[in-house]
Image (tube, rainbow, N blue to C red; front, side):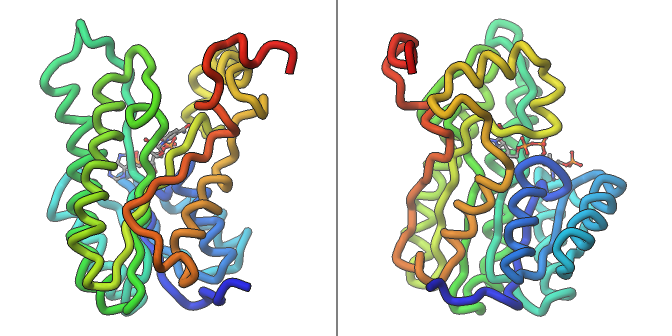
Length: 260
Ligand code: NAP
């Protein structure tokens, strides 16, 4: 039913692990050529080897830091060199260091905003000419329920950065509409990643108990939502966000989950 996407190209920032690797897997299975961008070369090489083996697809890598504008440009240039164009940008790279507001420093805020907000904005800017040239350019931002919809102690800077991504996307969607580019966001709930595993079993059990579906999401759940925004059939959808959270934001209070 959907137009095949075979042969198109996608840049996935933060593609070396977690949600980004899941997005890359889903796009590779759909026939995309994939450029993974992240800072650590060894993780990139491992992810690329895994994804090539799993999907048989063309998976390329570039080591770069999206909080540096010059690196954002280098990522876009690398995609152009390797693939000849960019059809989709998945601006997914993000950091979430925990810090209570009472202890927060200027550097803590800069670290989170430089990657999550500035990195998203300058990745979009760097990819613009290629996205426009494709005739069907797509930007898919990985935001979060944390910030736009919910809060969690220790992540006020992170929540602010994820809400800022949505503020950015609404104006970007208007500015880029005449160029045939759509800009949308996926808002994950709690997704099972290597990073979440580090937070321990108690944290995981607490999260599962708060989700109506009683399970964390899989990284591919975010990939499928991102892939929908990338289809030709989603071409009239722009400036929107899709929550993918197993119903986590729905209960009015813990009582709403009792007995289900
Ligand atoms: P993760 O497992 O820690 O992976 C983060 C990825 O981003 C890695 O590939 C990392 O590689 C890369 N990265 C971090 N800083 C970067 C930078 N400055 N430049 C380039 N790449 C960078 O995180 P995740 O849980 O998959 O999160 C991915 C996105 O989903 C983030 O935007 C996060 O806010 C969002 N999210 C996650 C969840 C969840 O439950 N996991 C929920 C809601 C939203 P290097 O460290 O090698 O650079």
